[in-house]
Length: 137
Image (cartoon, rainbow, N blue to C red; front, side, top):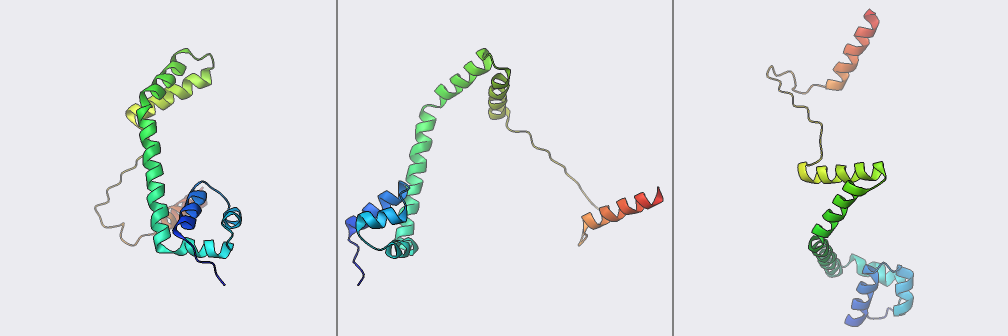
């Protein structure tokens, strides 16, 4: 006979699950079977509550980091200016620059106007051209 989960038990399950407790440990503490907990994880209402809590934790973490952002930037600037380790200085400067101007990305733009790109296997053509070039040598 399955034990009915009370709202308090569901709340306790969610808290322990979010804190990273193992399902076996949660089942033991709530005195229910672990299969019941696995079934609960499939329940759309439980999934919604977990997603809501996950978003809440993410937003709180982001807010805490943003509140202290200037302190972190000053610490990185201090490392960039006064560190005795050249690698640390370089990494701190890279971090500051990437934040200011963004990360560099390779970008290749090609414009084909003769219609040769329709249903064409470009790699096959490149390999064939390369093979032909090697045969000619």
